[in-house]
Length: 290
Image (tube, helix red, strand yellow):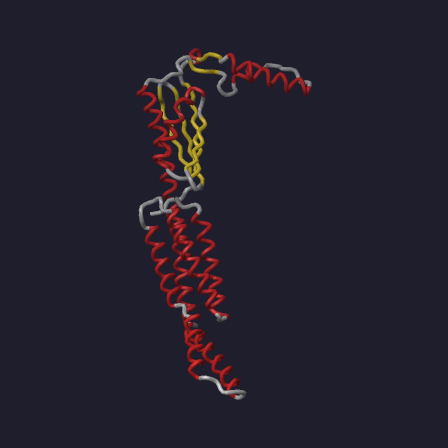
């Protein structure tokens, strides 16, 4: 069953007296594009986190946010002097331009990211594994979200494919009428020409066969039905068929366009336009299928 590429997932847990919170958000994308935002003490693990997400989530644009709250005694914290001074210089520069005094600036700076750091920032290997498990849990939550969204996508796409098949059946009602119209027009032209000069009847038959073949849509009808069936079968396969569905959609479009060029009938042309409208809706939704 298809999955949506749009989703959200989160998870949290306690590791070494730190409450770890992980949030994941995914959007559609042709390739795997992973953005990770973590505190300073976790940055060296970014490659590991990137692989976890790539393996579990696959294609799409994914954003991960990890933060933590240390539940240990406040005395376990210390000030990162470099970070503190950097914030101080920036705030001092801004305040000098607007002529506002730096009252109680220390309390403000201490609430900014990465100013207060834990004395025991480093985790043991087993603790790092627990962090990985929290990320995997968030990824599973994201996947479940995408599965639920995928079920709705499936229903919508299936309704459009069923509509194209139904419209094709409507178009075929005019098939014999359309060919008979062409035959009658050619016959009328022949009769008018015979009044002026002798017409080779064999030549006329050849021309008639040519036009019958030119407007015949038997192959397009069969191929369109096959492509629509293939589309549904592909949606029923394991997840990760988004690109394949895109290729099948292109083939469906080619057959619909050929039907339109061969229609030569006002009602059939209207039906082809409706089929194209359904196809455009499929193309829009396919972009969000993983």
